[in-house]
Image (cartoon, rainbow, N blue to C red; front, top):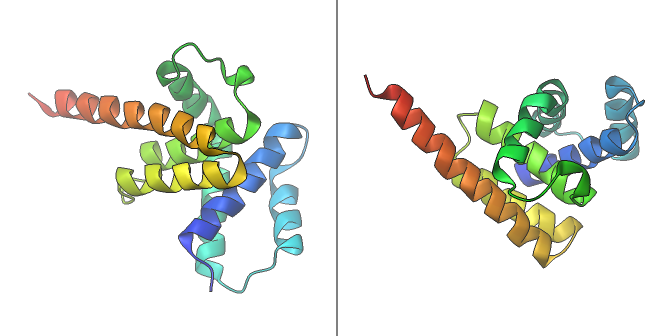
Length: 145
C-alpha cells in the first residue's frame, strides 16, 4: 500500500524530470512516470499528481520564495535534487494548509537525504524552517487589525 511519503517521492521524481527536461509536457511526464511505476492506490496517486501540477502551476511563486529564504544561493546553483525537494515542500507549505508544516519539513528532509545526502537534508531543513517561521509571522502580522 502506498503512502503520502511515496507520493512525495514520486512527485519529486516527476518535478525533477520536468526541471531537467523543460520542453517535456506535464501530462506526458505524469503518464510516463506511472507507466513505469504503476500503483493501484488512486488516492495516493492523486496526491502525487496534485503536488506535481501545483508545483508546475505555481513555480514562479515557489522559486521566488526559495530565492527569498535561501540566502547566498541562486536556484541555478543548487543541486537539482535539493531545489526540487524545496519546490515540492514549499508548494505544500504555501498552498496546502491542511498539511502541518512540521510534517512537510520532516518529509522533505527525509526525501532529500534519501535521494541526495545528509548535507542536503540540513540544507533543505535550514531553508524550509526559515520559510515556515517567517511565513507564520507574516500571517500573524496580517491577521492583527
